Image (tube, rainbow, N blue to C red; front, side, top):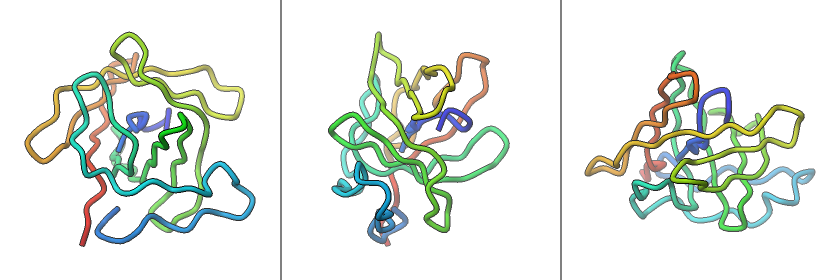
Length: 135
């Protein structure tokens, strides 16, 4: 998520009308996938749920933020790209992957009427985040 932002980070960030992809057997933290993000993210950060994330370079992924403070990023085919912990700290959405990368915190814009928002990384790059659409 850090590479694209949330989401997630932003989350972000962040189910195309279908259920979230089935969790992989090797990822027990993903076993209880939350429902798609029906609630609009607050200005202080996203709420648990799934988000469509488009990075500054156009890369797309689905970020799922769990209520237990964990997240998982998947590519459009459902392959896990990254997972770790997320939290809102000092009004920013922060992601700490399971690897050795440092935690990254994003500044989220106020949500639009459709729940979409921008997540700005510390380097100024902007990621677009929206609740995962239901079909």
